[in-house]
Length: 294
Image: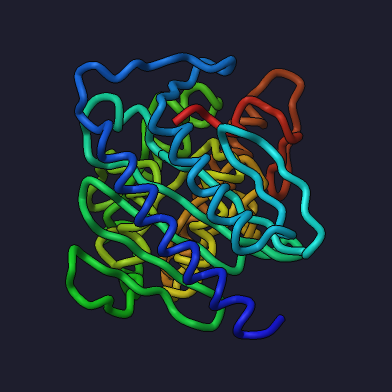
């Protein structure tokens, strides 16, 4: 993989995230915006659909052989070995309630490894972007981008924990994970969806743990947090955007958070009638903790 092939995709992702954000803001806090329910009961609006169409058009024009996976329009096959993974409005529930904590996520992977990530927060006018080996860059408003770094907080009792919703943990049967992390941290706040991961990548929060993620929720976050010196991991400690769950955490807290998550899950499984659980806990793809509606 040449540096140019990576950089050209990063540049397109950054430019396209800005254009999609401008489109989305035309619908933000519009009292006449219609909200529909998809088959999985998650909300969708014309902003989601038009933003993804814009992104797909730009990608096809510049990289017609690349594959695309998007939340709203599914899979477009490709032959180049590259795949774009799109979430035009991550945090649609925040968006439709007029809350500014929603973002546009663009990830690009090759051979299963996430190489490029962009998270643009249109209503906050900030963005982070990263490519493998090129660092994670954070831009607020029209200021020059600065190199982003995760925090160096080393113990949970000093940490700021973010989460999207306790309800998501409860629905996934993972309340013990949430409660143990919440009770053990210095401060917990529901600054969730992609915004919580952006806070970790930029050192403003220390960890966010999510019990349910689709690939389009997670792919862009992997290089962002990795290039900022942290880790995006599934609950078994693997760098993966396709496991159905995930966390962004600084490097110093990685092992403590993983230990808590895995210990809580083992204890819960062992408490179930007739159950036995040892070692890392896994669940089949398509289980109830995969891809909670956001």
